[in-house]
Length: 112
Image (cartoon, rainbow, N blue to C red):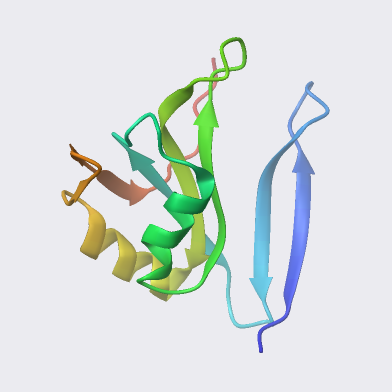
């Protein structure tokens, strides 16, 4: 069984935790995956189930609009480096809920 150490880093000026780094028992870090063009009805659990077919999922989150609560049509999944690459290769360009997924390694958010 793997042990996890979760480190939460506060975002500058927000007081909220933006990044979670998962260290897998000293064997490496996880990779954050961007998942775009999701059906607006997709839940966190459905996203997790989709990616679990390709390895262990540490977290799966569909992002929602703060004011309306409506899905923004994209989310993020965290997996081990090896599992993440398998999932990206398998799911990028695949159809899910009538939409073609865009799946790639998440990039750092640019400054506004």
